[in-house]
Image (cartoon, rainbow, N blue to C red; front, side, top):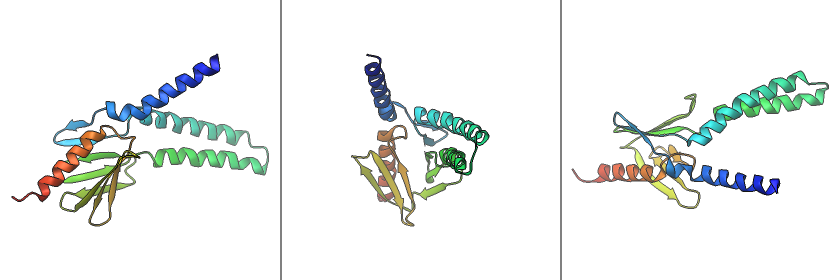
Length: 164
């Protein structure tokens, strides 16, 4: 019976996390609309990174032979990858669309004048905005408020192309 309960609770939690993007709302401040990753995803990443670093330190202390070095190295690379490849926060303002991850290592900007296409992938629930210079910003299923994002992008692209 406890195994069944564990499976049911796990399925409910995963279902909630996958649907959380629809419930959370974008943040509007001073004419900017921010679409961060969902809260549970950010929380999980912030918990995994320190735990992976701790595991790396513990594994380094337990190294007994040359082959044992592979485990702390892989765990250390995993903890760095969790920090570096964290999903970015997407910002929409009057100048255009921008995306930057936590460390600011991967910044992308698309001005409204250079925005060329918006593609909504219904199956994967991703929305991709591309520029004329082949720069793309992707709103994934792990970003908040996908309906508002699509509405804002299509409205601003329509305003840009409408005759003055």
